[in-house]
Image (cartoon, rainbow, N blue to C red):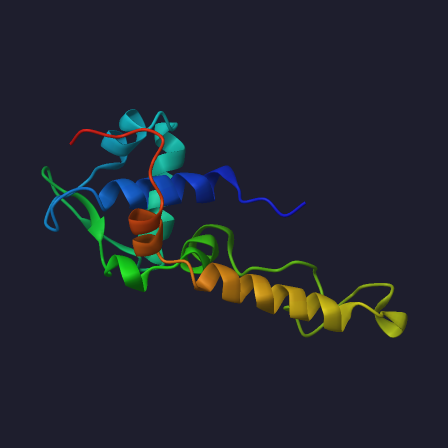
Length: 144
């Protein structure tokens, strides 16, 4: 079953929380983990991955923290998935050149799997954080 990992969920939660503040507000991993009931160690790793993949910016120091690097419309769900989980890959042989699959010589699904992967990539690539913020009403309203 195709399912986003908890880390990807946490990344989206953090990014959406960061859209609720002022553009210059800095968020700490600790603050986000406490506010959204996420284990602090995992939130720290999520924030590191988002920083490494240039979706957020890290500011060091006593009053440091994280802030969005891009506009909400420039960050899409495929960016988040890739930052946390690596490239989207529905089956092992679709994204790699050298497939070690035993069925490779008689495989009749490589092409269809590539099509499914491309469609998923396009689908998630067309959903931006701005879309999530603008089009969906959160179940819980957070007070800043």
